[in-house]
Length: 387
Ligand code: GLA
Image (cartoon, rainbow, N blue to C red):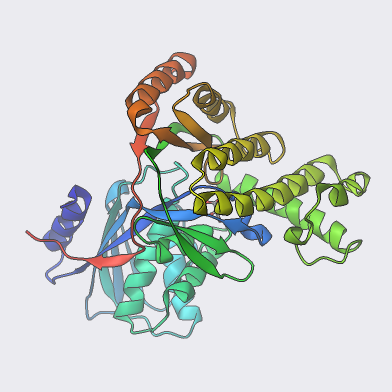
């Protein structure tokens, strides 16, 4: 069994007398469609076998007790009022607060959790923290929310106390992921389909730059504002609802002088990325991984030059990957400014790719990167631990 899950159960039974339920709440990867979930675009995420483990049981009191093992911190709060705090506390309290806002009556519970997603790696540990707790509370409180409703609740929770104005991708993948599948999610209608991942001799390798340059929420929210500004200018001139209604870049170019350069560049990136994600879905269905990988490379170029969410470390990793004939696609993944690159690598070349890239990266930046070969997984669920 997983050692993090074992540790969570052990810590729970050492601290509390009741027998908890155990939940696994996954992180996510995203193959393509970056920074377009909050722009009505298409994204292609999958839940992964790294995530957050929760042990939870009701405690027949009016108190909630948390133990965040990764931080070695405890938190005890009453059940009726939740206010903004800092760090991990914001994420769990904001989730409970969303249940309160729905009119649910909260009951006391004990909770221990820990994860195996490196923080700031771009695999969305925050959605995993939110999703595990929301799923468990939905069961404990008999709220009867379905998985999509839970994903939306978690997104609202992330907007609220942590103040990150995120899209729906991470929370959706966390709840709706399926092993061996990627999701193709239309973030405007929330319609989704599962696409089988035929990797044809390749694997998904994440390289963690082990840097995080900025407080993600600040720059993230700025990108979102730029897009909103650009869209409102375009909407006042064109008969469109969202970026996806612009299917030709020339239609945007006409308005270049009507907006600040950074706003224009964000609009251009979003329009191109929505088109790329749609094309990529076709390539995946046709098992054309080579063409898929080329689109990933183009996504990185856009994220770096137009959307400006890359950094020198990520650019370095992607450039090296581009020179390796075993890598068919490489780009930064998630919010950016550090974290991981996602790479499609031929199985026989994985060891060499990891070794050579890590060595060069270390020599250049004096930082040791980490590599993970990722497996897809099911969305948040209860698990059993056999002693
Ligand atoms: C973060 C957000 C997501 C998404 C990505 C970028 O992970 O939580 O909603 O916007 O960044 O694609």
